[in-house]
Amino acid sequence: MAGLSLKHIYKVYPNGTKAVNDFNMEIADKEFIVFVGPSGCGKSTTLRMIAGLEDISAGELMIGENVVNDMEPKDRDIAMVFQNYALYPHMTVFENIAFGLRLRKMPKDEINRRVTEAAEILGITEYLGKKPKEMSGGQRQRVSLGRAIVREPKVMLLDEPLSNLDAKLRTQMRSEIAKLHAKLQTTFIYVTHDQIEAMTMGTRIVVMKNGFVQQIDSPKNLYNYPGNKFVAGFIGTPQMNFFEGTLLKKGDEVEINFEYSEAKITVPYSMMYKAKPSYLDGKSRVYIGLRAESISINPEVVKASKSKIKVRVSHKEELGNQTLVYGDINMQGDGYTESSTRIIINMDAVCDFKAGDIIDAALDITKVHLFDKETEVSILPRIPEYNYLDCEVTNGKIIFLGTELKLPPAIQCESGKYELLIPTDAITMHGSAAAVTVSECEEINGKYVVAFGLGDRRMYAVADEAVKCGKAKIGIDLKKISLLKDGETVVSAMPEIIKLEGKLVKEKVAETVEVNGKEKKKKVIKFFYDIEGFKLPCPDTAATKLITAMGVKRAFTEKLYYECTPYDLSFAEDGIPAGVLNVLDYGKEKFAVCEAGGKTAYVLCEGAVADGAKLVPDVEKLSVIEAAHNIRII
Ligand code: ADP
Image 1: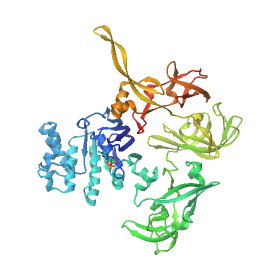
Image 2: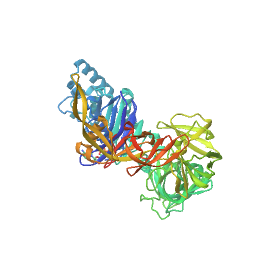
Image 3: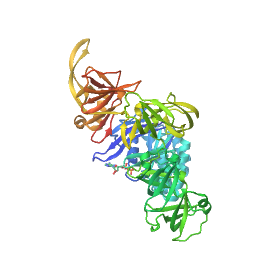
Image 4: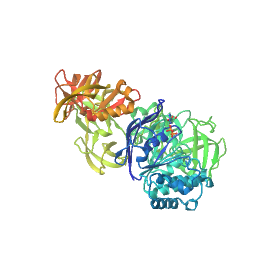
């Protein structure tokens, strides 16, 4: 039994295909994780890297307490079940299941015990003496599951194990695998392209597309809070309806206008607090997502609803347990062609209509999903990034929602009205900036999203710990805020990451070593990060990682990006020559703004910095990225 940790995992195949990009995930012991996505999205590659059947190009993979990047598959304590059962045709079922154990020279009694037990769990005891060809597909897959179980692995990996089975058997085996997981109490990782399989089996699902993780969440959360249009469309049948449209703020309300149609609904502005205000200008284009069951043509519901749109119905689909009504919100649309006006409605009551009828449909506005038209990312993120507020700056003070704060010297701007962006992670729940009332604290993927009231607004903070509801005092880290005027940034937040560039170099260095009590001079190879012309000693472990990931030749010729925070840079006698441009005084903290090798670096400092300053990054805190493929290696 073990958990897994995947940190910045990449896979680049020798032909240059980047199959997996920056895969990060912590998998707890006993979880049932499903990797799902369309063919070619990188799910099998990720699974095969976990199994050790494929080299990891960059990143760190841990199973339990061990880094296993370079560990042989047989030593990883995992078992894998494949789509094509891979059974030996000439062996009996018993021998097939026992094969791996015999290779390990396990005592006979123990093999008997394990095989009998596994066969019992899988209900194939009576077939133990038979050959695979005498069995059905489902039974054969049970044998290959048995072969995995007897290994008593820490982690079970299953690569599309049911895709060779017919629909009925698949459904049956689905619940059997779920039962098996409950019984074995082992971590399962299961790969499938079938979203229904994923939704019914996984405790958490990883949705992938083109080698990138799109979202990691529970089935329920993926369905209710898809982070982007791809996830929204991939999860759920029938597929979510997507319309194109614009949003226009009018006082306390926001009008949602559907393109290519007369349809229009109004929602309270409070539903849009998490959205960037620029989305509400009536021009920015968005996708409006609504699931079939969030739309009703039940006359009672329609009568009571304030959010109605006209639909020209075309046909219906009887699916037994539900009836889907197809139509178009464009009165010229045909309801058959998949378009940005076609609509599918889950008919929740007996309704009387015929093709061509124009009827009213009620929308459940609390279930509206909105995505950016270009990036397709949700504009109402579940974990909000910013609070978007109006503010006024006057005499070095900033005023918003009845709160007045003195601006530090680093923030200079003319008096006037501005848009204020306060990142949710810039707010601490213990401070002295303002008194608030916490109304909700929700744990989402290990973070706590805190909703609180300030003045007449709801605001959000993202905290590392749970916060009690009720009165609280917040603090605001002013170096993280931004001020905008007419969409233009007037005061920017201080960058959290400093980017520098250079290469990995090696040199022969003379070292004094002790041999038999005598000092001797010896030449040894040492590695250095060349960063903007300065040679920073690079730990051998880091150099090895770079050489392993990039190959010996490329490791010393390719450009590298170095990243760290302003807290990981300091001034020293020798380092990257830096011209100090100015010092930003945020009160408790001061940061020198430096020009280093054509890049701007921010460095925590005490106050004034003398000319000719030199910068040294903390080598332990440095992230190193291969520039050509944008792969984070360290
Ligand atoms: P999935 O399991 O999601 O269908 P894969 O992990 O098998 O996807 O493949 C991801 C990508 O990597 C695809 O573009 C595929 O063509 C490519 N790929 C897979 N195996 C190899 C290989 N051995 N060499 C080169 N490219 C590969």
